[in-house]
Figure (cartoon, rainbow, N blue to C red):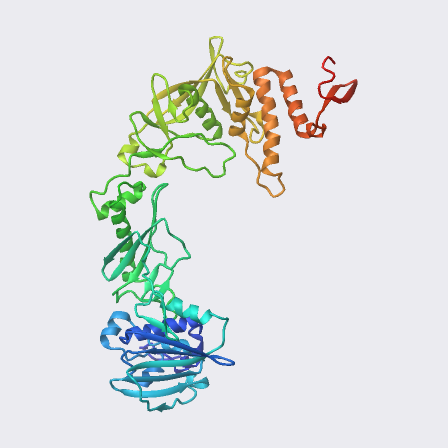
Length: 555
């Protein structure tokens, strides 16, 4: 057991033997690291050339920077000869050159301190062989040439283009200028602060898009995204200008190191988004996001006094498109339907009250109903609105009233139906209608189990009632062994139509309707054109005759 009382961390000399595994050794890594070194050296341009040999490609990266003062720093893992100002501003790790580890590499460099030329191959990368340093007579700057395995046609040029696209210096490939672009070119608004250019983007967020440009090295980081309620989604991308405290995780530099600088940047991004929203004509921030926005601006306005107009939902909807938002008018009210039975019932009541509008209540107490938006709870204007739910129905039979849920209430068609609504304050609102549907036992997928009432004086015809039943009850199965949607809908429509005819016209009409639909689906298409089928069928026998159309009129 050791008797030491103090220790100090150090790098084992054996670490250099694993240097070929520090980087993936891809061209993307190599160009990213060499380009960054050129930028730190104060270069004004970078030139990449490629010579395709029989079994390899000779690639050279040449810059006109300050050059390398001491060659020993070049091959010392974790050590660099960058000036003090560069080290304080960018925290260079002295590892970038080792992205070439394992490749036959030649370096020639001229600096104010002198010039040299050296070649590294094989064991020289792992410290197991000497590297000869030879004199060199060349212009100021550094040229690094290396052999790389040949790749598919065009891949090398595409890799150079990708590395140069957002790099701050001009880059050429075999003498041709490589196009560059502004990382924030498509931003809705660009805000410059604390060494960052923050681009705020409108409705253009994707986890597959790079969000940070670190002097040409682009990364995917999950910066803040703020989504307004059924409205704009705001996201950001960040272009680094001068941020010495924001550093990348070494050695690969594929993610941002979590420190106070990153926390500060995230806060700046949120502030930037809120500042853009503040300048918009209106917003639909959730109440929670609005409270945060007020930390940045005390006079941040509340969300626009708008809500989606209420419209009925159906049982078959897996996803429902939110209706268009509209300004709140006097009499604006919220209706919070609980299911498709409730929604279809209330929608019929509204259309009947005003002649067809799906969201307005006519009569002596006119109102415009809107959808509830729970994210708005907390805004004073939203909390002040009455929010009604359906709390009961009352059916009148010959002057006597009964609740629709009572077992005998639907044995005969009522004279009148009244839907009872109650808001969050206990206020009642009664709506007269001619139709109500409720969920009965096992009613999902079975129109015969739904509880339905239609007044005697209703103007609903069997087709209208069939559609109402379908909207309230039909929920197709998406199991892998289920029939197609069309087959399920057709079968359900037959059952719903039979139920509708039975309610409105009686049992005989329902039987005939079922036969008629079955005949139309399965038999009618077999009758030849210009012919007519005469059919008589009973338990005692049947008779089918094909005649020419127009014959047998008296039979």
